[in-house]
Length: 214
Image 1 (cartoon, rainbow, N blue to C red):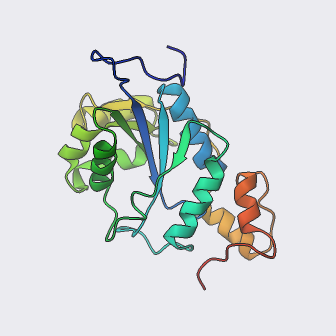
Image 2 (cartoon, one colour):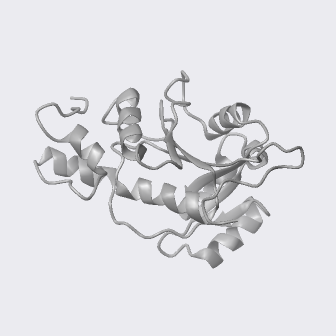
């Protein structure tokens, strides 16, 4: 199978889909988000990667832009990549956004699909403190991205303790861009071209820009 190609048919003739889930505030989305999603689509041979903007965060301050606006920006960011798609699963669901609920919703919408949930390596040791971690691991494999000192060897060691047999290392290019950086540049009137997808830049800069909350 070629990288990024659709999965082979399952035994009953129906395609066994492979779907990645990349959650985040996307406040706003930047090129790092798109690169990670593209690398997962290619390296894990996924049929589709869903980029899921957080609706109501449970462990971070409120986002600068409302959920519906962040969803619109993610839609613009991935519009030209057939393997990437924005998902409104958390934006449309009332109440706090928990990973287990999102994965269950994706599972229910795609019965029989194999799911991968993407996370940075620094978050892997915290998995036992998440809501229903055992069910998370039943619903999806984890695609864990090395970060700084947390390399593939470190990931393998932690995985044996918190998610044995359910972790794939996802190597991606390191892009030192953050949503915080983008917000600070916008506030200072600085340029964001090449730091965000061109379609997102058109939503952030200019007389009709989507302004963040006051």
